[in-house]
Length: 407
Image (tube, rainbow, N blue to C red):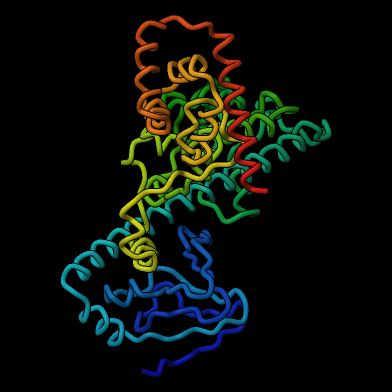
């Protein structure tokens, strides 16, 4: 089957949000940016590279485009029309079709939540932009010539003037401005005062606070920064701390990590993680396997490969105690044990865990194993200092034998 190829130049639009969806696309060469406009804000969703497919959800759901796509650089796209896409899906088994429908529904849900997350990120930028404009206007207000000051100068910046200036500088709603001022007042780094109009009240004394009981339609609102020198520092710190307590719903759903990433999270090495997996100290329920790659690899290795497990491979320097002999080849272990007197061997066996102990008995003669077991019953207390010296000596013997075998 021949597929149509379309070429797009850098920054050229491939489709727009709201367009009729007739085709999906496979990136043969180049890269594509997917984005949305939410409340007049440009929201960057993701960047796609060669081999990625996009635009298929709208085609399959017979909906208009839910986002826009633009070529980041010169890009070649393989065009997949609706009938071809549906034909391939219909040819798959009922189980695969069912799984595909569920995955499609899940991706749509996650895309929506990703948009919300991106919008929250833009909200953070909006918050700091408003704070910067407020700080700038407050500085100008404080240093205004006395001749230019109004009778309300000491109350702070007029809220209506502040709002107008912010909207002149950036595209933002009055609601967002109000919410930002509310947050700043709640954390007590600004002061909000209302001055009642003389037409509604003979008293024009300002009232502090921003509760509804202090407000009326004709009241004037004033904003004063309480700590001008540290205002921006406080606002940045407030938002950075706030984000630490906000979970990422998208990451919670779709994030999978490998062994190295998991080791980094728990502040250890991947070698220790592998050891704990082998020892059964980490629950198997937290691990998963990529099915397609695993099946392909298993078929390459053949069935005989999985009938017997080899010893885990570790670095020589990782062998530190008697319990680590589980990683030592039997031929090396047998030679090392033959060079240890039976008194020291008894001490080593007492120090070993159950798994290492069974390996020791397996690699010595049955007669010697019987003697060691009998002595272990009577030798309940051991000198710890002497025991650690014996263990260190034995580990060094193992390492010497390993090095000799490699020469």
